[in-house]
Every structure is written in C-alpha cells, then in structure tokens.
Image 1 (tube, rainbow, N blue to C red):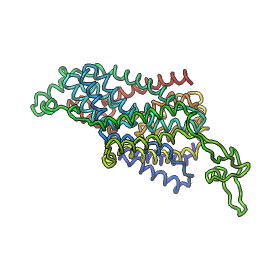
Image 2 (tube, helix red, strand yellow):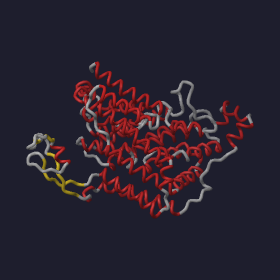
Image 3 (cartoon, one colour):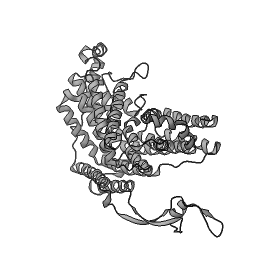
Image 4 (tube, rainbow, N blue to C red):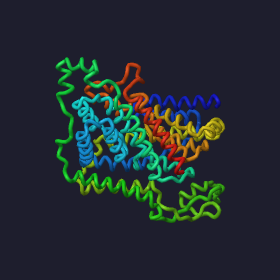
Length: 481
C-alpha cells in the first residue's frame, strides 16, 4: 500500500467517522465531502452509486410507510403484545422473536419502538429483570434485516452477487440467513435467561423502590396497545402488504414466468466505435442508446430482473392501500418507517459511492495486497464486514460498499453468503437509535450503557448472536452451495 493510498483511505475513514458522530442524514452527506476530496482533490475516477438498491429501498419503504399510515403496524404490534402477555414467563425468548419478525416483515428495524416499552412493562410486572428480554430484543430488531426479502442488505447481496457470477435468489439467501439468525438469537436469549440478578435480589433496584417517586415511575404506568381499536381497513392493508411479499418471493422462485423483452446489449470485449465525425463511443454507451452496430452491439432477449419486479410490486401494493385501505400518504411521510427509510437511502447513497470510488480505483492493488490472505482464509472477510458495520451503522451500506471488493478479491459467493450475518456489528458501540431507545424505555434501569462504554447490555448478546449465526450460516451455505 502506497503512501497516497493510505492518505486517501484516511479521507474515507475520516468521513465515515465524522458522519457516524452526527448520525442520521450526516452519514451520507459527510460521505459526500470525502467523495469530493477524492474526485476533485486527488483526481480519482468517481465510482458508481448503487442506484438499483436505492430504488428498491424507496419502493419498499414507501409501501411499508403506507401500511403504517393505515394503522396496519398497530395491528401487528397488538398481535405481538397479546402473545407476550399470554406467556410472560417466556418473554426472554418470545420478545426477540417478535421484534425479529416485525423487522423481517417491514424490512427496517425502526418499527419496534412501540413494542419495546411493552416488553419492559411485562417484564417489570412479572418480576423479570428487563435487561434480559430487552437486550436481546433490541439486537433482534436489527438482525431481521438480513432475513427480510425487501431489506436493502438482502436485495443488494442478490443484485451484486448475480452481477459477479453467483446466481443466487432472494429465497436462497433467506434459506441460509433465516435459520442461522434464529439460532443466533436463541443462543443469545439462552445466555440472557438468567443474566444479572433477579429484581427482588438486586440491591440497586430495591434501593430505587424505597423512593416513592421512583416507585411510582417504575410501577405506576402501563404501556399497552390493546386498548386501541384497529379498523378493518388497517387489517386489509396488512393483508395487501403480506400479499406483496408473497408475490415477490414466488417470482424469485419461479423466475421463468417473468416476461422477456428485446433490447440492445454490448458485445463482451467489443472495441470502441468511431463515427464518421470522429466521435468515439464505447459498446456500453451504444447499447444504452439502443444503437445496433455489427461486432459492437447486438439484439438480445432479456428477462425482467428481480430488482424491477420488487419495485413494481411494492409501489403497486402501496397504491392499493391508498385507494382501498384508507391509508394517508401525508401521514405516511410523517411516520417513523418512511422517514428512517429515506435516511437510509441518503446514507447508503453517500457511503457506497464513497467506498466504490476508493476501491474501484485500487482493485488491482487490493487484490495483490489481500489476495493471498483471503484465498487461504476466506472466512476472514467476516471480520472486515463486522468492523465496517461498527463504523457506518448500516447493514445495507456494508453490503453495497464491501461486497464488490470481496468478489474482486476472489472470495466465492457461497462463502460470502455464509458470512452475511457478520454485516451487523453496530451494537458494539451503543450509539444506535434502537439501543438508546431501549435503555430509555427500561424504567427499572437494568438495561444500561456501562461506565466504560463497551460494557453495556447489548454487547454479549450481540457477540453471541453474530458468532453463532455466522457459524450456522457458513455451514448451511457450504452444505447447499
């Protein structure tokens, strides 16, 4: 690695670090400053922003946001709450499953904020230390992203893998990630089942109860959604949303039924074409302009791609909910799901474009420098994914920015699928909104960020999950691929 490469890499890392300090939109915006420095300051060729992934996120988040606006999310939360209150003794195992499946359905972990106070309330009323279910439930709300058919991380993995010769489908990815993540969460929940002191034996908690104000704060209120009346239109919106997911999965399984169309494509290895006026165009440019020139471009029949299918189905489902399920578009835009999704779009746009600019300019150097290591220890890329995730707080951004590099290093697709759960590492530093919110929701104070920052309630469950999930996913991927 040359001195110039190191300086440019420091620009990338500094932009990501500063962006992570501000969070939210700043991740993408400040990445733009790093991109500007690389392009204008170091004259590097700009990389390609992940437009296909961004379009899918917009479509999926719009659909999920419309469902939330219809009241459908409230119904899903009610179903989860009824199950938790029916089996309070098992809340350490059931709570993470509830938050996990909510994220799987909607494609974002920001849908669980309504459920977290309920998990805490049930735990306190039952005398269970809230840290036990809350810590794992917060982890699970993010884990579901790599198991959702409409999440950016899954869609990006499939799109990038197909472009690099690993023909994997969304159902095949879920076939590996889903059981692996469930195993990881149950391992983390098993650890958490007897974690810490019971509330009646915790001196710190008992001391709080001696203060009447604290006692009233802890036991005086009850968080619930069961008193909310859910209209039939909201339930219908959920059915429309689930129907859209089923259609997407079915199309992914039976891709032969997708329509085909004629187009112009570039011939691989074709030279640039020079027109009579001296203008030069590449084969790709000519294909994009639909210009047919012998030995440069050719007519071809192309099947509709899954990324387009997802966009069409999601947008159509959103329209159906608006027309027939009384879903307000204005309310959707103000909702947490749509807003968090748009933040993710900006973050992925900036981060992935910045990373692609750096790595695409140094592909050969990276291959020479890391090729021998990853060739001998393919699984070591999981450590890289994990560390990058700690830095940028986005599983989708990790996949979009790092997966092309991994393929360029010669790592086989099945190995990368096996280490997919490692893209979730941002529990390591407890600055993610779901973790911070969980700490605030726990009125008992048992879910907390420790004095030394890293000794917090999410660290051990997160590490147990990630290690277990990667081991299981790696084994399954090697078995089936």
